[in-house]
Length: 224
Image (tube, rainbow, N blue to C red; front, side):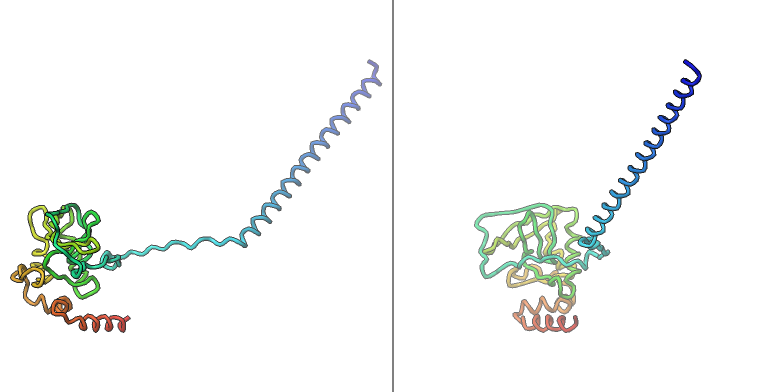
């Protein structure tokens, strides 16, 4: 090939290389522009969506002592519809404590036989509940059912595994009083000195003085 031909071929190759570089640069510019458009559209969409979105409220937790937690209290045993158990019947297992004289074993609501402990919102009510919790903790309780009401709630003599009578234990602790109408006075000798003065609302109920309960409830409302 002549010198002129070589020079011409070299110039052609140079022009071709320059063209390829320019084309590559244009591709990069086009890619950057497309990315910029996509980012702008995405940002605009998120901005509009955020106007219609509000973050859910954060859950707040507080440390609360067990005694201050309010639990749903099942309805009390209805003596007006009660009838003796037709056959010897018992239930045993871990007990869930409702208050100082009421428990639940395997979904059976049980009132301790023959005693009266303060209601959960009455003076000494919380203390009575937690005393019964302490007695039953880690033990199986055996309930020998004596009566059932129309709603399946029961009255039973309840015993710990070592044979202790829960009714007797609660009276001995000074956190329940005997209820002679139902016990025949079986636990009266176990009452501690001053128990009826301390649990004056329970004593009033036994004597039919429910106006005392009404007065106490009114006083609590005014204190709030």
